[in-house]
Length: 198
Figure 1 (cartoon, rainbow, N blue to C red):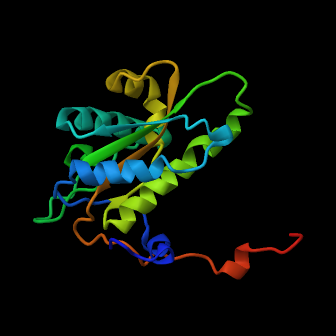
Figure 2 (figure 1 turned 90 degrees about the vertical axis):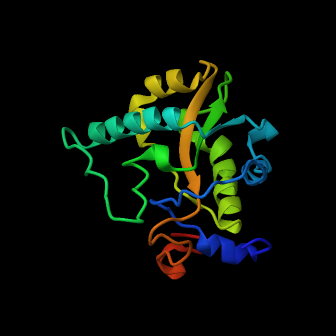
């Protein structure tokens, strides 16, 4: 999908749950992260850091913490067991180690940066750039924050300093199984667009 029309790329992006085992090259990852760094940020601080995780053991441990976070949200309900269908990759939350690349997006802390509920304004434009760049190159992504229920352990696992906070985890790879880019459903624009007043 290289050289795709911007509006086609926007419509192709969707949350991908299964990833093919195909390798994602360092050059492609760098191209995607570079696109993320061209996003706007408050006062052009560019307070972002991107941890590109390929190590299978680190991804496995991160996946275990992710599952614990899911259980925190759902009480004592354990995650569903992985699908063992031949040729169908597992859902990323069942086996994060099988995802080719996981990107942890982090935000630098600084004093007097404004209300905490506005933190996303400093980082999520970069996250969206990352996800759109991936879609333009035919790769799938999914924005998730469930692991934050185990944030202390995630920070320790990834060696993240106290001067930085985790904001988003993004699995990255080519869609696998029956997953594909595009075809997401959206509300009609007239249901969400208002002129001058609500």
